Length: 242
Image 1 (cartoon, rainbow, N blue to C red):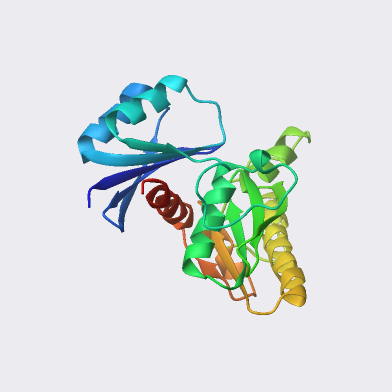
Image 2: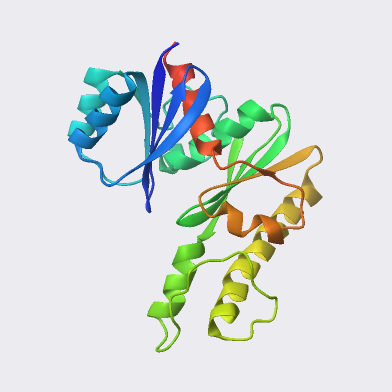
């Protein structure tokens, strides 16, 4: 069935997931979006198709290269999606959020789904049982919160994230870990609780590079999958290659 490259260009990292047929194989982190780096990946994996979801500026040359070397699709609100977007300005919805919602629609059809992406920001993305992506909410992510406290104070340091910390911090490091990670965990649980009060037959998904720091601290039942965005990208690409 050939190899598909699913490019996810986020604010923090540029990543590419490799699918052989319908099977996820690996993820590569790119140092930059230089066309020669992308071409190297295309040649290395003998890619026949590709999709790009980008929330950052990238060169038009990159898209031209992918279109020349593969059967290429750029993800946008105009893509053939497995859901509708009944919001005022669908063109403003980030490509990463579209991919996350597509994955939920594929994995859990006919249910209300909240998809939580942990990246530069936390995105809460709600798709109802009628396959309507209604939006959600956005708040600062893990690294952003740590950096903000360092930059906007005189003495608070940057700390390395760690899932293992006490509720009551005993030094500056553990106070910061408890405040940020426990605070975000309670934020995530609280928003899940609010949706669960309003909707029956409700599922919640969690994904993103920072996922492992939060799973031990969440009380709600949640489907955690670090590759969720790639599965959504692959499904959208397949739908748009027909």
